[in-house]
Image (cartoon, rainbow, N blue to C red; front, side):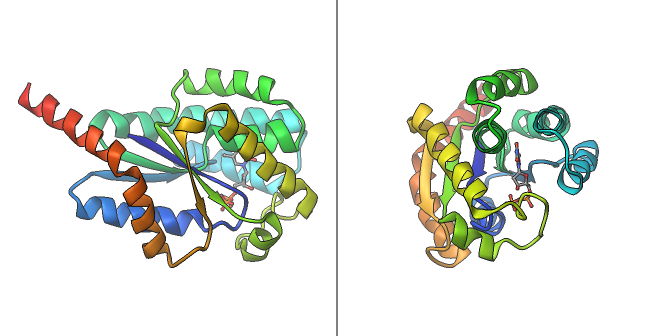
Length: 210
Ligand code: TYD
């Protein structure tokens, strides 16, 4: 099962992911947590390049996709093959929201390169951790060049996420950022994703029996 977490800056995705991972492990599931851009040695190098240097929107797009192809090959696909639940901090919907919508490269172009980079792999479930971008920016911790963009840019990013969600509503679950402690929020989230997990467990059991 492949679950991605999306949302504006400062939504607290990474702490929520860690809390959810603890909960899932306590239920006997193997969990891999990872992030984009990054999540493998080469992809982490590309991450530093993207986040530290201004560049043209197209260069930015292709570097995100290069990092993604590497991350998939080295981390995500092997974890899914092992049967892990993969929790990934940002994925293709961030590219739609940031490069497609906020930078203006269009959803159509970004969707096409997303598909090439992922070989068509889509998340089973995407959690939108939603926050007012102005509030999120106040919480954002590691100042990179995206966080230095104005609030108008980040409002566009949020609109991009809402647009992506509208295109595939059944894949998304939305929760309000900072609506409780990370542990409480992880519990609420787990209740929402339990139906999916039951299916994954049943599938794993069937495999074992075979
Ligand atoms: P990061 O510090 O990980 O941000 P956050 O903690 O908010 O997740 O930095 C990643 C930045 O890269 C973030 O500003 C979002 C941006 N990004 C894109 O623009 N396109 C993408 O495809 C991805 C994955 C991230």
